[in-house]
Structure formats: structure tokens, C-alpha cells
Length: 246
Image 1 (cartoon, helix red, strand yellow):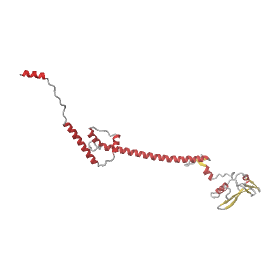
Image 2: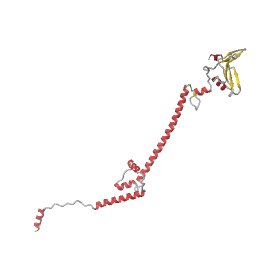
Image 3: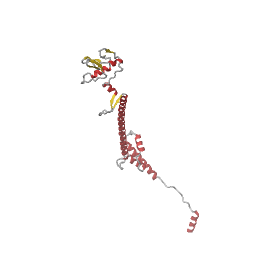
Image 4: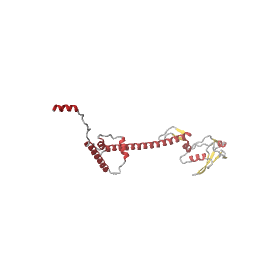
């Protein structure tokens, strides 16, 4: 766009004050004018600096360009116009860190990379939180299982050695010796499930079976007789003894 080198003034349509002609690059001294290579525009907030930047960024919208003789310039091709405004900074410049000021900034594609990194860090943080919640649930489940195991063991063992209704004492009554409460025993008890009848009925049935077993063992002992044998006789010796008596 060759006309850009002849740019002296721009006409911008400001919504709040209407159309204004701004001699942005026109320098006048000693009744002569020249086109400057740079221009500095400063003003208070709301003076129109951002509106001017938007007009330069989009020259087809409420924007006209003139040379130093106020002749219109064709600036339809805006490829040579680059506006470093707030929008450009937000899109392409990013300060590293948000908690405090930092002299390190990122430009261009690095901004996209930084946004991708922050998004992945956010996802990672969410996954870590989920992982911690799962670990907490697993830990609580394990504690609940250990507590249930302890309660089951205590129930099988009974509160004291004299408690006849406990599994340990019943096992002793059946086998004549104490049995350890192992994982195999606990698993077998769990697999039995809840009985269809009451615990009192089960205990009564157990006592009846134990009584019958005791009676059966007692009868076997009472009816027991030792092996029968006939001692060998010395017939010749007996005759000799009888003859002596005679």
C-alpha cells in the first residue's frame, strides 16, 4: 500500500463527538508542511485513543485518509497497518505469573502455549483432587472393613471365656480344644449369611445335638467289653497234680 507513505491526516467518526479530522502525521512550521514518520497521541481516559486505534485497525469503518494537501488516499488494503493496542496485547502478550508483577512476558505463539499449559495444569489439578477424593474413600472403606473384621472376631471369640454362646466355646465343646479364629473361619461365617431361624433356635438345636452326641459316646463306653480269650491248659500237668492228691 504505497499511499501509506503519503498519509498526513485521518478523518475518524467518533461516536460521541462526530467526525473529526486529525493531522496525525502532518507537521507545520514556518508556513510549510511536512509529513512526519512518527506521531505520539496522548490524552485522558475517554478522550478517544482506543477509538482511534480501532479506526486505524479497521480503515473501512468510519475512517478516511488524506495527504498533506488534503487529498483522499486509498487505504483499502490495510496490510501495512499494524495496531499495537489493548486487543493485541490481550491476544499476543501475556505476563508470566498473576500473583505479582514479573518482568518476563510471552509474545506471539508463546501465549497460546502458555494458555495450553495453564489449561493442562488446571486439568491436572482437577485430576489430583479427584485422585485424593478416591484415595480418601478407599481409606475409609478399608477402615470400615478392618472395624467390621474386628467386631466379627470379637463376636466369634465372645466377651469372656465363660460365654457359652460364642463360636470359640462351641468349637471347644465339639472338638475338645480351642480353635484359632482365622480368615478362613471368618470367611466361612460370612458366607453362611443370616440364618432363617432365630439365634435362640439355632443355639437350642446346637445344645440338643451336643447332648445326643454326649449320650452316644457314653453308651459306647458302657457297652464296651474287653476281648474274650480262653487261657491255654496244661492237661498233663493237671493229671499229675490230681494223682498226687489221690
